[in-house]
Image (cartoon, rainbow, N blue to C red):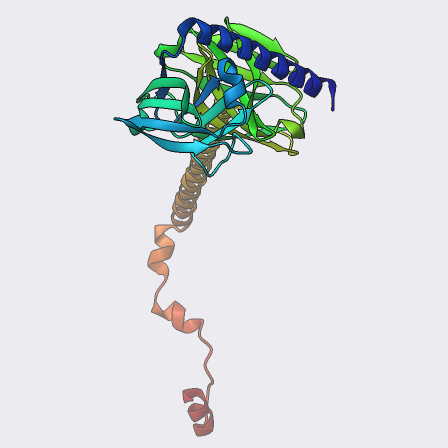
Length: 342
Protein backbone atom coordinates (compact mmCIF):
# COMPACT_ATOMS: atom_id res chain seq x y z
CA UNK A 1 0.00 0.00 0.00
CA UNK A 2 1.44 3.38 -0.96
CA UNK A 3 1.42 6.51 1.17
CA UNK A 4 -1.60 7.98 -0.61
CA UNK A 5 -3.71 4.85 -0.03
CA UNK A 6 -2.66 4.73 3.62
CA UNK A 7 -3.54 8.38 4.08
CA UNK A 8 -6.95 7.77 2.51
CA UNK A 9 -7.70 4.81 4.82
CA UNK A 10 -6.71 6.82 7.91
CA UNK A 11 -8.87 9.73 6.75
CA UNK A 12 -11.81 7.37 6.22
CA UNK A 13 -11.48 5.92 9.74
CA UNK A 14 -11.30 9.40 11.24
CA UNK A 15 -14.32 10.47 9.18
CA UNK A 16 -16.38 7.47 10.33
CA UNK A 17 -15.44 8.07 13.98
CA UNK A 18 -16.37 11.74 13.65
CA UNK A 19 -19.62 10.74 11.96
CA UNK A 20 -20.43 8.30 14.74
CA UNK A 21 -20.00 10.81 17.58
CA UNK A 22 -21.85 13.51 15.63
CA UNK A 23 -24.80 11.19 15.04
CA UNK A 24 -24.81 10.28 18.70
CA UNK A 25 -25.02 13.96 19.64
CA UNK A 26 -27.78 14.58 17.10
CA UNK A 27 -29.73 11.54 18.23
CA UNK A 28 -29.38 12.48 21.89
CA UNK A 29 -30.61 15.98 21.14
CA UNK A 30 -33.50 14.99 18.87
CA UNK A 31 -34.60 11.78 20.56
CA UNK A 32 -36.72 9.66 18.21
CA UNK A 33 -37.88 12.56 16.06
CA UNK A 34 -37.93 11.94 12.29
CA UNK A 35 -35.17 13.44 10.16
CA UNK A 36 -36.10 15.15 6.87
CA UNK A 37 -33.96 14.70 3.76
CA UNK A 38 -34.08 15.55 0.06
CA UNK A 39 -32.90 13.51 -2.91
CA UNK A 40 -33.08 13.89 -6.71
CA UNK A 41 -34.47 11.57 -9.35
CA UNK A 42 -31.82 9.31 -10.84
CA UNK A 43 -29.51 9.94 -7.90
CA UNK A 44 -28.87 7.92 -4.77
CA UNK A 45 -29.06 8.33 -1.00
CA UNK A 46 -27.02 7.10 1.98
CA UNK A 47 -28.93 6.88 5.28
CA UNK A 48 -27.12 6.33 8.59
CA UNK A 49 -28.89 5.12 11.74
CA UNK A 50 -27.10 4.83 15.12
CA UNK A 51 -28.35 2.44 17.80
CA UNK A 52 -25.89 3.27 20.60
CA UNK A 53 -28.61 4.10 23.16
CA UNK A 54 -30.08 0.62 22.90
CA UNK A 55 -26.77 -1.19 22.37
CA UNK A 56 -27.38 -4.16 24.70
CA UNK A 57 -30.73 -5.02 23.12
CA UNK A 58 -30.08 -4.32 19.51
CA UNK A 59 -26.51 -5.29 18.67
CA UNK A 60 -27.36 -8.89 17.87
CA UNK A 61 -30.90 -8.22 16.67
CA UNK A 62 -31.83 -8.58 12.98
CA UNK A 63 -31.70 -5.18 11.29
CA UNK A 64 -34.00 -4.00 8.53
CA UNK A 65 -34.98 -0.92 6.57
CA UNK A 66 -38.66 -0.46 5.81
CA UNK A 67 -41.05 2.04 4.24
CA UNK A 68 -44.02 3.20 6.31
CA UNK A 69 -47.46 2.89 4.77
CA UNK A 70 -50.26 3.50 7.28
CA UNK A 71 -49.82 1.14 10.20
CA UNK A 72 -47.48 -1.19 8.29
CA UNK A 73 -43.79 -0.92 7.45
CA UNK A 74 -42.76 -2.83 4.32
CA UNK A 75 -39.21 -4.19 4.44
CA UNK A 76 -37.08 -2.81 1.62
CA UNK A 77 -33.79 -4.48 2.57
CA UNK A 78 -32.00 -6.35 5.31
CA UNK A 79 -28.35 -6.59 6.32
CA UNK A 80 -26.02 -7.45 3.42
CA UNK A 81 -22.34 -8.23 3.24
CA UNK A 82 -21.71 -5.14 1.10
CA UNK A 83 -23.32 -1.74 0.89
CA UNK A 84 -22.54 -1.54 -2.84
CA UNK A 85 -24.45 -4.19 -4.77
CA UNK A 86 -24.79 -3.04 -8.43
CA UNK A 87 -27.84 -5.20 -9.22
CA UNK A 88 -29.87 -4.07 -6.19
CA UNK A 89 -31.47 -0.67 -5.51
CA UNK A 90 -31.65 -1.14 -1.73
CA UNK A 91 -28.78 -2.46 0.36
CA UNK A 92 -27.77 -2.21 4.02
CA UNK A 93 -24.78 -3.05 6.22
CA UNK A 94 -24.45 -3.20 10.02
CA UNK A 95 -21.20 -1.78 11.38
CA UNK A 96 -21.24 -3.27 14.89
CA UNK A 97 -17.96 -1.58 15.81
CA UNK A 98 -19.66 1.82 15.44
CA UNK A 99 -23.18 0.59 16.33
CA UNK A 100 -24.44 2.07 13.09
CA UNK A 101 -26.62 0.95 10.19
CA UNK A 102 -25.88 2.37 6.72
CA UNK A 103 -28.48 2.09 3.96
CA UNK A 104 -27.91 2.84 0.27
CA UNK A 105 -30.85 3.60 -2.03
CA UNK A 106 -29.93 3.94 -5.72
CA UNK A 107 -31.71 5.30 -8.80
CA UNK A 108 -34.26 7.30 -6.86
CA UNK A 109 -37.67 8.04 -8.36
CA UNK A 110 -40.57 10.23 -7.28
CA UNK A 111 -42.33 7.17 -5.84
CA UNK A 112 -39.46 6.69 -3.37
CA UNK A 113 -40.58 9.77 -1.45
CA UNK A 114 -42.01 8.89 1.95
CA UNK A 115 -41.20 7.87 5.52
CA UNK A 116 -38.67 5.13 6.28
CA UNK A 117 -37.46 3.40 9.42
CA UNK A 118 -34.27 1.72 10.50
CA UNK A 119 -35.28 -1.17 12.74
CA UNK A 120 -33.67 -3.70 15.06
CA UNK A 121 -36.17 -6.51 15.35
CA UNK A 122 -39.45 -4.64 15.94
CA UNK A 123 -37.81 -1.65 17.57
CA UNK A 124 -37.46 1.57 15.63
CA UNK A 125 -33.93 2.99 15.67
CA UNK A 126 -34.44 6.02 13.45
CA UNK A 127 -37.23 7.50 11.29
CA UNK A 128 -36.35 9.36 8.10
CA UNK A 129 -38.70 11.42 5.94
CA UNK A 130 -37.26 12.30 2.57
CA UNK A 131 -38.62 13.86 -0.54
CA UNK A 132 -37.39 13.05 -4.05
CA UNK A 133 -37.39 15.94 -6.55
CA UNK A 134 -36.85 16.19 -10.28
CA UNK A 135 -33.64 18.05 -11.24
CA UNK A 136 -32.37 18.38 -14.80
CA UNK A 137 -28.77 19.12 -13.81
CA UNK A 138 -27.85 15.79 -12.30
CA UNK A 139 -29.05 12.31 -11.40
CA UNK A 140 -27.32 10.40 -14.18
CA UNK A 141 -24.57 7.87 -14.78
CA UNK A 142 -21.47 8.69 -16.83
CA UNK A 143 -18.43 6.88 -18.23
CA UNK A 144 -15.06 8.62 -18.30
CA UNK A 145 -11.56 7.59 -19.38
CA UNK A 146 -8.27 8.73 -17.82
CA UNK A 147 -4.69 7.89 -18.80
CA UNK A 148 -1.88 6.48 -16.70
CA UNK A 149 0.30 9.25 -15.31
CA UNK A 150 -2.15 11.92 -16.45
CA UNK A 151 -4.81 13.93 -14.63
CA UNK A 152 -8.47 12.92 -14.40
CA UNK A 153 -11.08 15.65 -13.96
CA UNK A 154 -14.55 14.82 -12.63
CA UNK A 155 -17.26 17.48 -12.98
CA UNK A 156 -20.14 17.33 -10.49
CA UNK A 157 -23.20 19.54 -11.03
CA UNK A 158 -25.54 20.23 -8.13
CA UNK A 159 -28.94 21.97 -7.82
CA UNK A 160 -29.44 25.28 -6.08
CA UNK A 161 -30.90 23.42 -3.08
CA UNK A 162 -27.41 22.30 -2.04
CA UNK A 163 -25.47 25.48 -2.78
CA UNK A 164 -24.71 26.22 0.91
CA UNK A 165 -23.76 22.64 1.86
CA UNK A 166 -20.40 20.86 1.72
CA UNK A 167 -19.31 18.90 -1.36
CA UNK A 168 -17.90 15.37 -1.39
CA UNK A 169 -16.55 12.71 -3.72
CA UNK A 170 -17.14 9.06 -2.79
CA UNK A 171 -15.52 5.96 -4.26
CA UNK A 172 -16.73 2.36 -4.13
CA UNK A 173 -14.05 0.43 -2.22
CA UNK A 174 -14.24 -2.94 -0.48
CA UNK A 175 -17.99 -3.12 -1.05
CA UNK A 176 -18.65 0.24 0.59
CA UNK A 177 -18.79 3.93 -0.36
CA UNK A 178 -15.86 5.77 1.16
CA UNK A 179 -15.49 9.58 1.08
CA UNK A 180 -12.30 10.43 -0.82
CA UNK A 181 -12.36 14.19 -0.33
CA UNK A 182 -14.70 16.68 1.37
CA UNK A 183 -14.86 20.46 1.01
CA UNK A 184 -16.88 22.51 3.50
CA UNK A 185 -15.73 25.68 1.71
CA UNK A 186 -14.78 26.43 -1.90
CA UNK A 187 -11.74 24.15 -2.09
CA UNK A 188 -9.97 21.24 -0.44
CA UNK A 189 -6.96 18.97 -1.03
CA UNK A 190 -6.36 15.39 0.04
CA UNK A 191 -3.16 13.86 -1.34
CA UNK A 192 -3.52 13.54 -5.13
CA UNK A 193 -7.18 14.70 -4.96
CA UNK A 194 -8.21 18.35 -5.12
CA UNK A 195 -11.75 19.78 -5.05
CA UNK A 196 -12.83 23.23 -6.24
CA UNK A 197 -16.34 24.72 -6.18
CA UNK A 198 -17.73 27.13 -8.79
CA UNK A 199 -20.72 28.70 -7.06
CA UNK A 200 -21.84 30.69 -10.12
CA UNK A 201 -22.14 27.59 -12.33
CA UNK A 202 -23.29 25.28 -9.49
CA UNK A 203 -20.56 22.74 -10.20
CA UNK A 204 -17.63 21.38 -8.24
CA UNK A 205 -14.62 19.78 -9.89
CA UNK A 206 -12.40 17.03 -8.51
CA UNK A 207 -8.94 16.53 -10.05
CA UNK A 208 -6.96 13.32 -9.63
CA UNK A 209 -3.24 13.84 -10.30
CA UNK A 210 -0.82 11.13 -11.49
CA UNK A 211 -3.59 8.66 -12.34
CA UNK A 212 -2.79 5.01 -11.55
CA UNK A 213 -4.59 1.74 -12.10
CA UNK A 214 -6.05 1.82 -8.59
CA UNK A 215 -7.88 5.05 -9.43
CA UNK A 216 -10.22 3.17 -11.78
CA UNK A 217 -13.64 2.43 -10.36
CA UNK A 218 -17.03 3.89 -9.48
CA UNK A 219 -17.28 7.40 -8.00
CA UNK A 220 -20.24 9.37 -6.65
CA UNK A 221 -20.62 13.14 -6.40
CA UNK A 222 -22.16 13.76 -3.00
CA UNK A 223 -23.42 16.49 -0.66
CA UNK A 224 -22.20 16.83 2.93
CA UNK A 225 -25.38 17.62 4.88
CA UNK A 226 -25.60 19.23 8.31
CA UNK A 227 -27.37 16.26 9.92
CA UNK A 228 -25.00 13.57 8.58
CA UNK A 229 -27.90 11.14 8.91
CA UNK A 230 -28.47 11.21 5.17
CA UNK A 231 -26.15 12.00 2.24
CA UNK A 232 -27.54 12.78 -1.23
CA UNK A 233 -25.52 11.34 -4.12
CA UNK A 234 -25.96 13.24 -7.39
CA UNK A 235 -23.98 11.65 -10.22
CA UNK A 236 -22.41 8.20 -10.65
CA UNK A 237 -19.14 8.12 -12.62
CA UNK A 238 -17.45 4.98 -13.93
CA UNK A 239 -13.78 5.93 -14.36
CA UNK A 240 -11.68 3.80 -16.72
CA UNK A 241 -7.87 3.97 -16.77
CA UNK A 242 -6.06 3.38 -20.06
CA UNK A 243 -2.38 3.00 -20.99
CA UNK A 244 -2.86 4.94 -24.21
CA UNK A 245 -1.27 8.36 -24.16
CA UNK A 246 -3.78 11.13 -24.45
CA UNK A 247 -2.84 12.85 -27.69
CA UNK A 248 -6.26 14.24 -28.43
CA UNK A 249 -6.44 17.85 -29.57
CA UNK A 250 -8.72 20.20 -27.64
CA UNK A 251 -11.93 20.93 -29.54
CA UNK A 252 -11.29 24.70 -29.82
CA UNK A 253 -7.76 24.17 -31.15
CA UNK A 254 -9.05 21.54 -33.58
CA UNK A 255 -11.67 23.93 -34.94
CA UNK A 256 -9.11 26.73 -35.35
CA UNK A 257 -6.63 24.45 -37.14
CA UNK A 258 -9.39 23.17 -39.44
CA UNK A 259 -10.49 26.70 -40.38
CA UNK A 260 -6.87 27.74 -41.04
CA UNK A 261 -6.30 24.68 -43.23
CA UNK A 262 -9.43 25.50 -45.27
CA UNK A 263 -8.35 29.12 -45.73
CA UNK A 264 -4.87 28.08 -46.86
CA UNK A 265 -6.38 25.60 -49.31
CA UNK A 266 -8.76 28.21 -50.73
CA UNK A 267 -5.90 30.70 -51.05
CA UNK A 268 -3.76 28.15 -52.88
CA UNK A 269 -6.60 27.30 -55.27
CA UNK A 270 -7.26 31.01 -55.91
CA UNK A 271 -3.60 31.71 -56.68
CA UNK A 272 -3.43 28.69 -58.99
CA UNK A 273 -6.50 29.87 -60.92
CA UNK A 274 -5.09 33.41 -61.17
CA UNK A 275 -1.74 32.17 -62.51
CA UNK A 276 -3.50 29.88 -64.97
CA UNK A 277 -5.68 32.74 -66.22
CA UNK A 278 -2.67 35.04 -66.68
CA UNK A 279 -0.80 32.33 -68.57
CA UNK A 280 -3.81 31.73 -70.85
CA UNK A 281 -4.06 35.44 -71.64
CA UNK A 282 -0.35 35.60 -72.43
CA UNK A 283 -0.60 32.57 -74.74
CA UNK A 284 -3.65 34.00 -76.53
CA UNK A 285 -1.82 37.31 -77.06
CA UNK A 286 1.24 35.64 -78.60
CA UNK A 287 -0.89 33.44 -80.85
CA UNK A 288 -2.92 36.42 -82.08
CA UNK A 289 0.26 38.35 -82.78
CA UNK A 290 1.74 35.47 -84.78
CA UNK A 291 -1.47 35.02 -86.76
CA UNK A 292 -1.61 38.73 -87.46
CA UNK A 293 2.03 38.79 -88.59
CA UNK A 294 1.42 35.73 -90.77
CA UNK A 295 -1.55 37.38 -92.48
CA UNK A 296 0.43 40.55 -93.05
CA UNK A 297 3.30 38.50 -94.56
CA UNK A 298 0.94 36.64 -96.89
CA UNK A 299 -0.57 39.87 -98.09
CA UNK A 300 2.86 41.32 -98.79
CA UNK A 301 3.92 38.19 -100.73
CA UNK A 302 0.76 38.21 -102.80
CA UNK A 303 1.04 41.86 -103.59
CA UNK A 304 4.71 41.48 -104.47
CA UNK A 305 3.86 38.51 -106.72
CA UNK A 306 1.18 40.38 -108.57
CA UNK A 307 3.37 43.40 -108.91
CA UNK A 308 6.21 41.28 -110.36
CA UNK A 309 4.09 40.27 -113.34
CA UNK A 310 3.63 43.15 -115.75
CA UNK A 311 0.45 43.55 -117.65
CA UNK A 312 2.20 43.37 -121.02
CA UNK A 313 3.57 39.97 -120.20
CA UNK A 314 0.17 38.76 -119.22
CA UNK A 315 -1.27 39.95 -122.51
CA UNK A 316 1.48 38.33 -124.64
CA UNK A 317 0.97 34.95 -123.15
CA UNK A 318 -1.38 33.02 -125.41
CA UNK A 319 -2.39 29.56 -126.41
CA UNK A 320 0.47 29.30 -128.88
CA UNK A 321 2.91 29.65 -126.07
CA UNK A 322 1.20 26.83 -124.20
CA UNK A 323 1.25 24.51 -127.21
CA UNK A 324 4.79 25.44 -127.94
CA UNK A 325 5.95 24.26 -124.61
CA UNK A 326 4.22 20.91 -125.01
CA UNK A 327 6.34 18.18 -126.59
CA UNK A 328 4.24 15.36 -128.04
CA UNK A 329 5.42 12.39 -130.12
CA UNK A 330 5.68 13.31 -133.78
CA UNK A 331 4.37 10.01 -135.16
CA UNK A 332 2.71 8.04 -132.43
CA UNK A 333 1.84 4.46 -133.23
CA UNK A 334 -1.36 2.75 -132.35
CA UNK A 335 0.25 0.84 -129.51
CA UNK A 336 1.70 3.99 -128.11
CA UNK A 337 -1.70 5.66 -128.45
CA UNK A 338 -3.41 2.86 -126.52
CA UNK A 339 -0.64 2.86 -124.03
CA UNK A 340 -1.03 6.58 -123.58
CA UNK A 341 -4.78 6.18 -123.32
CA UNK A 342 -4.37 3.58 -120.60
